[in-house]
Length: 349
Image (tube, rainbow, N blue to C red):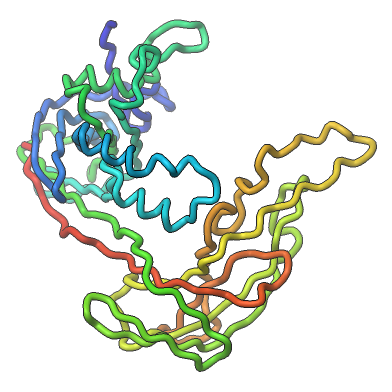
């Protein structure tokens, strides 16, 4: 296969330039490092007129992927609770959320856009290892497959790889004449960790819980049944649930910012398909109405955050799942948003 490799500032992984700009000039880096208990590789940067494009790859050991797939093979079954999916996502060797930032010639450059995909050695076949074809049946590498990227960078195809491409705009109107220093800072994104479940019946009810040995008390301030307007959903083929309860609450002592949130443990009621009108009997049919997107996602609990009417910043607001009829009770769940690793900076040049 001819290795045609063009990287554009506004392009995706191997895609054509969406704005007619020229591809970037390659700057080989070949930097490897350990971060958050994982192996990382930054093979190259690409210098374009608009900014720098950086490929960041994370390796996953094949044995770890095999163990993960064996443990979570039942996820294909129906009616798997959403918190089980979240646990599997936390354990996925190819899943790690982070935010990159670079220091170039002493200036900090945040990213403006990013793209990503994963190469999984257990799911590759002969067809998947061939270059993607365009609409004319030609292989011009405009939409490279995961394997093509692995081959281009000379990576071990027996390992799994999470492949990320980020674009960093120049701070100046023109590309720097030279690059004397380049460093990458990776900041892990918070991970959702489900906590204890609880119920409150009326304002003033309290729930005690702890996090890392620190005791907290949640106090319900208000519980208000609400109804979304009928025009909240644009798909006329379905009736959507629109009843929910908004709860305002406080947590004492005040936890660190964004550490704690509250969500409904219950899933949204699935939309119901309407009957086709007699004069239009060929209305599209939904294969699975439960996958229609509504607030918070129709296949998982709602975590709808709205602005509290109170001017007190200590008062927080969350909303229950959407239902066609008000539920007899609501079971809430504490969710911790933890960042298990500190940011780290790695020199690239």
